[in-house]
Length: 99
Image 1 (tube, helix red, strand yellow):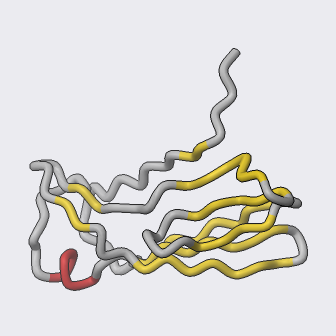
Image 2: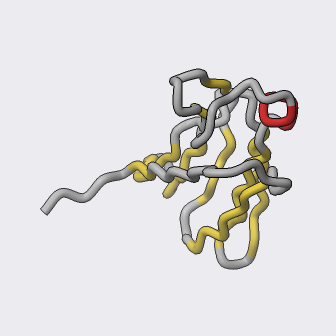
């Protein structure tokens, strides 16, 4: 059995959408910190037992953008992580579905 200390999540857009923000409720006793590169580190004292890589968008042809706003808000149960996609990239058809 292998236990990872990273999270990788794919959101696949098969059709144009008005939804540009995707939010996740994370229940944890760890302290979450948003890093300058838009990755998120979870701390337990001085250790970082868990992290989430910086997000990016990639279309069916491999075109990509890292212009995604990441918001992190602490809650009593842990935190909420919200990813807001690059509306200009989506709006002006600079991509090929699926994304």
